Length: 306
Image (cartoon, rainbow, N blue to C red; front, side):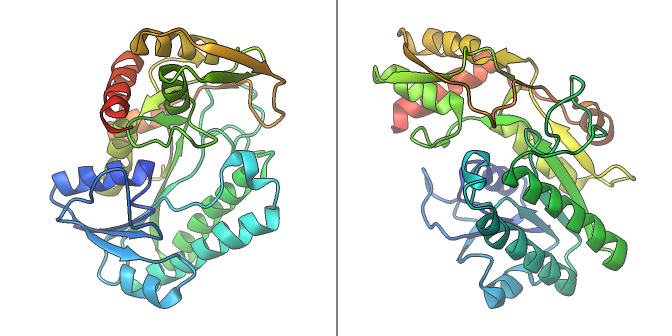
């Protein structure tokens, strides 16, 4: 099987590429960034470019069976600052990618959407895929629009797809200096005796899950025969508050955190926990790495690398 991974040098993409190579896929990485935290597997082919370079995209998808689309230029925290830029930087290039996939005869597109934003304010927990879709930030709107374009391309042209709505993945190679990724940020700042900012009272909860579990889900979406269900939530084994997460980080690092509290942010949902029943039923997927083990593995990588 031949795969193209857009954003394959990023946090999630690099783990996906490594796992695809282990499973003997023929893998190409399409990314604007040449470097990642460790070296690209020698079996993988690297293509430097962005999705606005139409000729490169056409060449990259030629002869490919599955495209894993992970490239995204914004995060939910900043997308609202420039909604038009979010559309031109993410949605429009994605549509061009789908057109190239259609013309090249790509069998299936695997898209990483967002389980934390496409649903908007939750009405029930855990949140099922059938929950109303009412995103309240630009990031969620463009992710949802991409989902709808995938549905349209399958209906009109037969381009198959699977959509994954992850909760909060974490693990090695997640940038601890970024504005998202509580696990990596907490580990880094606690270890260096830097203050940890808690927005609100720390009671917001998430179902954090280890990045290898997400890679397994994406590959299952590519390898399995799909019935009518093509949209899947992916989340963790347990729901954990920010305060509880920080406590567990303190245990792993062996240091107490210096905590600073700041006013709650309006775009942070108070609770995100996803119903992953469909992924378990249709793809045979389930999270395998506990939060304790995942934190320890992430901390070991950070200690050795950063």
